Length: 347
Ligand SMILES: [Zn+2]
Image 1: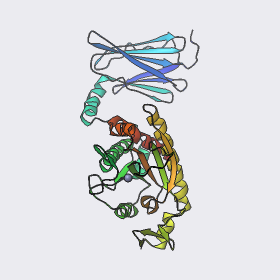
Image 2 (image 1 turned 45 degrees about the vertical axis):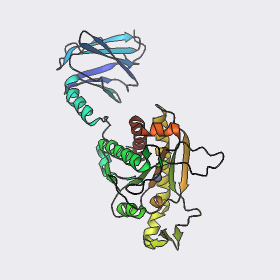
Image 3 (image 1 turned 60 degrees about the vertical axis):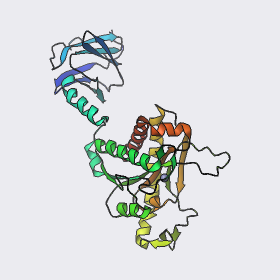
Image 4 (image 1 turned 90 degrees about the horizontal axis):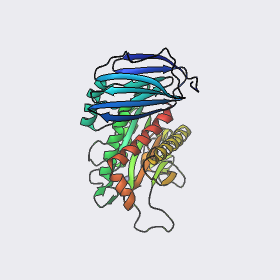
């Protein structure tokens, strides 16, 4: 007898998906494969669920599938087995009470696409299309930024920013970039670009370098997230933003730049992005946390929307630069930022 009363209520086969609906939410599914004689058995152990006698799936037929099986594997685990002839990735989705198992034919096309673009799948939410995210790849052109052997900050920030753009677009956001290639832009050109357009949030991506004169006791390694502080800022005079010694933007523009709304939203965004980078990257790699900091960076000041700057790591730190050059590490970092954005919007 089963120990749980989370019974399987309904099964259906539709458009290359096998759907299983339970009485309560599905908590966890363990998936693994066994290959034998040109067949791949995909095994899904659905935790804390029970199978009523009335449900079977052996009658289902789908392209590329030799057989479907289902059974009460242990007292609280239902096991579904899909014997596939065609290649199948074993992707499954849990949405509340519903578990969806993706079948071969639909994945054949998708998996080819995945190989071509070398990108992952991300959950798409149509509500995100109302949010425009500005991304700013630090430096560019003659402004190399920080550098160490074989890595220049301007290249790294562009690579990571393009990755983040792809992730966010797949998730459903509108994305605008201050630069999408190796091009010089001064800081005011960047903020002018953002200031003149309608958008929701601004994120600037950078990498760090230890200064020539190192301060004792400071660790020049790790990730940190900045938002605006006006404390001791020399950029401010007569309530106007100063850029290269010149007052720019009107007083009313300045008021928007330093509105308490922008401060509190930037703080919230910084917190969520910081937290999500640490937890998401931390699942796979060691990442040192330099924390959330405040500074009067021009790009954080001269926008009227919530703005943050992410220092992804130190190019001058041997261990960290190795990771920063690793494409998978870069992807994880950017996924962390994207997750932070999702939680900022609650989407
Ligand atoms: Zn930089």
